[in-house]
Image 1 (spheres, helix red, strand yellow):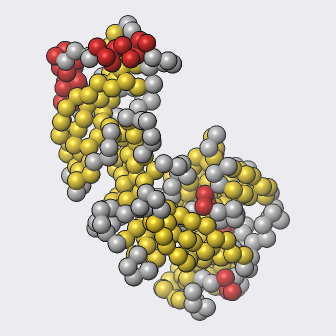
Image 2 (image 1 turned 90 degrees about the vertical axis):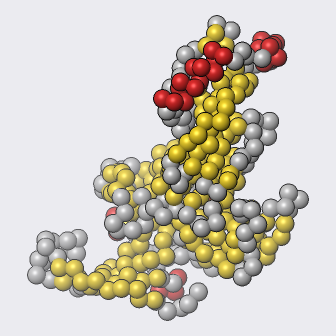
Image 3 (image 1 turned 45 degrees about the vertical axis):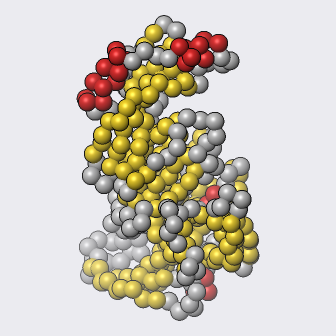
Length: 374
């Protein structure tokens, strides 16, 4: 990493009212946007910040919580014009988990350095639920470290997946660990996530989705989307690197989850399920849409409206198909016997199998499928 600051652009902003530096309306601030290096900034001393205390998660290691000093705006991405997703009120407990490698230097009577920090807040059994970006000045933080990520070795595991041996350097400390990277088909480029769940440090440098070219041995950051930290997910990116696809491969499960993002704007365009093996053909995936549940008292007539099936939005055509399928296709006797004689709570579900083109947002019904679920 170069030692010199790389100046990207300089902007002049005329101050229309008194700002946090107590300047008059006639004064001008010079804002310099730069890529920063550790040698140029002041470190945050972990554990000694005001209102800061330690928290530990099984999937996330040690992080530090902060009680915010005032109301703050949270943005979706680390850009100043990014969408504001939340307003957090004073004394909300947050955790700093990431930092972008762009710094704003505001020069007037004094020099102020502002960083964009990734935070999480709110939690359940598995850890933080919400994620977004804030300015360091909103948290009264005057400096931070930018961590470095290096791929030092690659190898294949027994399943044929690429394992990246990673060296993470943070505030002079080095930590080595391994990350599983995935690819689509035979492409030379692999993708993986790097965020606060990978480390036992305060925060990650440039968190999000990375691509590794195993032929040229080059590493690139391509998105600020972060992972959910759960095991059993595979992440692949389409050939033109326009879409990110995440799908689960849980053993002994007929229904698995799939999510798709548009990497041009980091928007989620699909959250749903698929049946059996994951099938992808170009921009088309095969999905399983829930229609109804059969128990001992008969069909529940939900018509796919249960909220507990995430991403389940049936069209009128799919609802009509499901109703007709039940009327014309008897449930196999072996499925009914499995539900009635099996251990635990089991039931029969009708899933409508469709092909979904996430480029054109069109879908085509393939068939219906009775499955036993528990």
